[in-house]
Image (cartoon, rainbow, N blue to C red; front, side):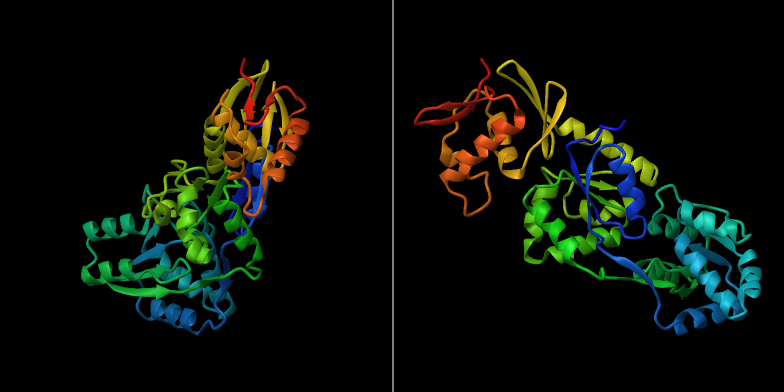
Length: 362
């Protein structure tokens, strides 16, 4: 298990649980790039939350939509500070409680409340459809918001005859230091990471928004060489909508996401035989006869180009195109020299005089 992801570089866009996810990936050998795309911050002014709480006490909700664990805990903690926790629990205990996912369910039960239903997809749309089928005309619904407002869900329930009390507990904000996110975007655009993980749909949107005029370059990378690993289908939606194939577990859990990546990334590797050696190319390393040999980006780029064309001579001009802009033919020679040294198998890459280089497959 310790080396399942050895040689791969994986970006982590989560904030609150980034250390947990990074540890799970590093335990399996991955190199991790931490780049929070968003952060969760409590509302600076809790007037709206207090007014929503008062509205629930004045007109007890028939239905409670608990969207997130952190949101439900934050709401009840705020009510505690106002001396309203017990009255709020009392009215919510009489509600039909829908927990959108396992974290929300855990917060509900920790508060001594009982949830009656959860959507298999953990999506707001499935919750709305369930409630519409159940019938909401004339009923009051308390909707604990998941960061931003959810106008489509609110409008659908109001169109079905419900009164919706939106309960804002926290909001999404840009990371305090945006530099790591922009660095990750550079790595994705240049295909220097093998996967990027997302644990919320807003984080996926934030990364694409931060890409600015490079969004198409980033999307092209995510559609091909860079795996987009999402914790669940709801998280994946912004990427799927833009034509990005995603890998997501059936159950939205961090451990399941890591297992999905462990299953998927090794299947993307290229394996070739050259000069009597078995080479498997991973993100920033080659496995030579079972031994991991980390390589810098330039020699790794040259090896990838040669491995795509085993036995075929590639001229320096073709290899030059795989290197960063501004490189010259001397940089190709340096990259080949570093590649031979890094592989510790000098006969693998053959120089063909006046023509270029090839992998020796004979």
